[in-house]
Length: 317
Image (cartoon, rainbow, N blue to C red; front, side):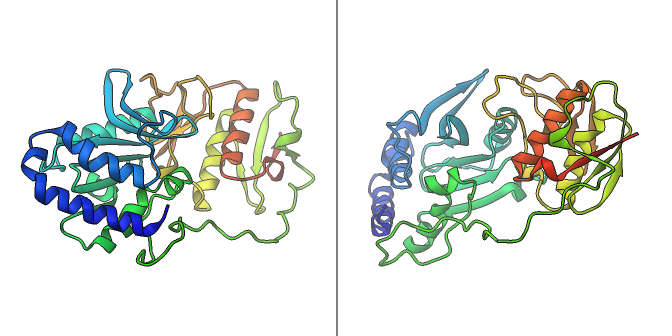
């Protein structure tokens, strides 16, 4: 995408609001057609491609005006209103609750002129969940472009929903996405001590009594039983700053199961409560299952955050 075209579109949309504002204030459909769809397309969301955008996305008894997709799952639920509709009302709490139930990380609402994006799983009041907001009429076209880059498809699909940081005027290259952590050549952490077994080497768990979990940094924690294995893994990840509420819910990718592993509340996707859970700094960990399923679940959570389960160990009693 050429950045000048985004700047040009913003100018066009501002003029369109001035010229056709009365008609747009009477019709949500016209607002979507004249203001919302053009901006989405310019940001890489082909509104005619069902692999990227599904209008009137239906799930359960609720519906979103748009679902912006990545890997066939909604990344952002977007609620559209006719021009001039106040955005800060019940639509926010309803939309965010819908995203929580669906496991969708972000929720957006717009009347075509004002745009707001919320991080749905952040455990704070609604106002503090807002990560991006911009108004086509209140800001300069350049400022609008920078903020709108938060909705750029590559940025959203890479998990970086943040405004741009550089001027877009005069550039002919694709806009920047949020930088990823640099790759280092640091050696991997040492394996677990000899008195423990690597998670990846445990093939027989039934009947074995666990005593401690050993972490790559050398720290250890006592385990009451197998069910606390995912709990302590989550606690360690949170302590290291790798896992937070914004990463929830965590469930096996592509699984048809409606069961969460970690979430900000203790209810699964289908509404049933966790059968056995522990709270870790505001997050809830499902710890029901046999020793093998708990071991597999723990390895999945660690790999989800780019941690090698082979560097984690178990000391048996």
